[in-house]
Amino acid sequence: MSNLFNSKIRLTVGCAAILASSLTYGCSDTQAKNDQLATQTNSELLQPQASLVSMQTGNLPSAPLPKALIPQVTTTNLLEKQKIPTSSQNAASTNISYAVIDEWKNYKFSVKGNQVLSPGKLPTTKVNFNQADLLTTLINTRKYFQEHSSADPDVLRKGLLGTQGVSIEDVLKTLDFMIVTLQEDIANNQPTRLQDVNFINQNFRVIRWTAYNTQNPKQQQLRMTKYAVFTHPGSHTKTAKFNTPIYSLKTTTSTDKFYTRYTKQDVLSGIYEPGGKEYGKVQPLAYLTRTGLEEALMQGTVLINFIDGTKAFFNVDKNNGMSYIRGLKATAQKRYWYFKQVDAIKGYGYKIDAKISIKPGVTFAGDVLNIGLGRIVVLEHTKAGRKQLQMGVIADTGGAFLPNLYQLDFLAGIFQSQEEFGQYISKLPEYTNAYFLVKK
Image (cartoon, rainbow, N blue to C red; front, side, top):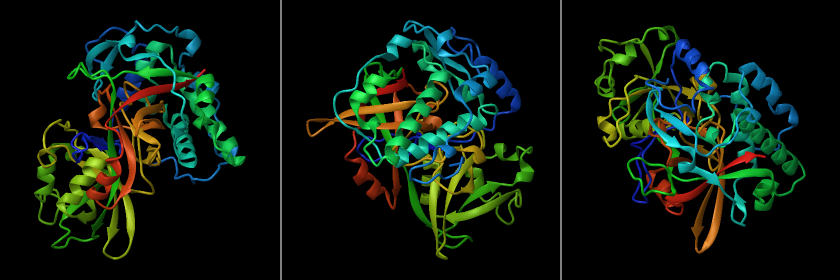
């Protein structure tokens, strides 16, 4: 909550726009939908049905963490609590059909597992990532399963990897194994074994991910778009320069869905400002330029440098329930997000106070409903004639990924401007080979 927007400003390097996740965006699904989803966890690999229904576990330090800080619930206990079938109950079959759903949990199309996934092997070269940042993001992601899977059954979906016999138990075991390995290697002040391809190929199933794009059937490689957190100047009060607000929904309005009646254009017309017909119903958090607002909406998180010398992160919280329209320019979109102040960059989470704290360079935003939260991905591309491998975890999502079986969005970092961002990502590939890692 990488939340991310499909219309995210991209430079000519080919970066596609996506909803940020956020960075990821908190869902405002009702408990009734949650209960319905819980019953769907075991049936998502069936043939099509008419209707199927992006920072908050704490900003953990980027230093070696003691085992006491690892989520103490065991994989077995979590699975028993959630009644999740284990991998022994799911024989791999690459010919299984998977029913793809959209963000409203409606069936979109079906795909055979072997059209997208196949056994693979990483090429022999070092795997790149920042050890401490990956450890922090893995711990926060694992903790989300522990603390929020009851309220957010979306994360218990096996997703497309279920066609390969990969269960939620396998996902959790993968996260646990990687956390322990990283902790041990960092504590011993040695390069982590997770950067050794031989170690990975010996200890993990490597599953090749071939892009599946219904709009472009010829696409084979995964598209890697990029998103970022931008710093913007702003003011706590409205000024001639900083005249575009970002708002927070008041807690007293949690059962009043008045905000779903208004488009972004309605909001910007001043309905919440003094004299507006809804004045007093929301809380202004800050005032930006219009450009600053659009980038905050597209990226999902913004770091505001206030003119009084203070600074703070703000992350998207709830939207007005209007769908994001791919291909429509940002200023014409009707979807509008309400924000909250947060303590770090935030990724996926079903509500603002549950979102995962994430780190740049090791976080991907992707299709959490159909691919899944916490899946470990390695991207492969060639630079100057040499193979390059980049590892990260899907810990964010956004509207551009619901559904999306052909793209990931890479959290590149915090940047002062689009120009700085563009220079950085110009060195990164637009299309890559992709692999999932699952602990054997």
